[in-house]
Amino acid sequence: MTSLTILVTGAGSGIGAGIAEHLAAAGHHLVVTDLNLEAATQVAAGIGAAGGSAEAHALDVTSDDSVAALLPALSRPVDVLVNNAGLQHVAPLEEFPIGKWGFLVDVMLTGVARVTQALLPSMRERGFGRIVNIGSIHSLVGSRYKSAYVAAKHGLLGFSKVLALETADTDITINTICPTYLKTPLVEKQIADQARTNNIPEEQVVSEIMLKPMPKGVFITFEEVAGITAFLCSPAARNITGQAITVDGGWTVQ
Image (cartoon, rainbow, N blue to C red; front, side):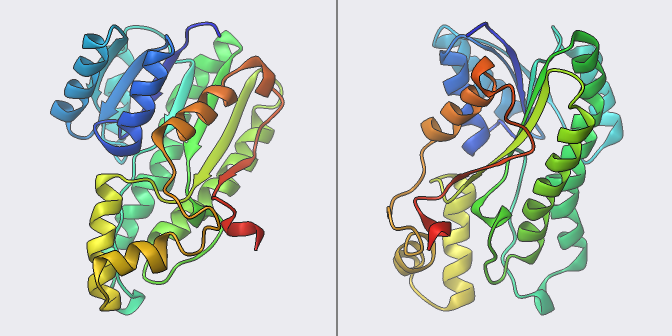
């Protein structure tokens, strides 16, 4: 595959960092962005130390000014946008601070629209672009105590369908990868939150809440999500657009 310039949001840790590292190892130039510039810089430095190509930038996906400031700072045009930035809050709706609820949606849905809107003109000008949203199994199903997260991740699917239609006149695609749980700091925190909210031990959260719905019964890996991202960027996937790519170990076939 031709080397691409790939911008990943929320790439200072977790899934974003894993995707960035694996795609850099495949020969692509990575634009590592995160609200935490120090974290993004560490990931980019690690990529460079491993022989890859990367640059790091601070990015707050909830801020118009932050997104606008990023564009002139980039070393080259972006071919691929991976919308990954996210966070979680676990609570029953009656106890869910509405400001926190809105913030989750701002990061994971409005933020996706904000960054995509900023990068689309350049993709259109060059006649090529790939947009990959990191959704979740919760783009497809619900779970108790995650109303904001589930609403935002469901919203990505509708957003992708509309953008697929709006970009059908050129070689731009947009798709959403929907994995079940990966072992990330965000998920580790969820384990503790779910244990407290459900009043069960943490190991029971893993076995009974996270992995039990999956016939395969194993966590998804960074390699899987990065590999699917790479495929969606390849010529073989040029007519795959507006789709939800489900990576759920059989969860939703039951």
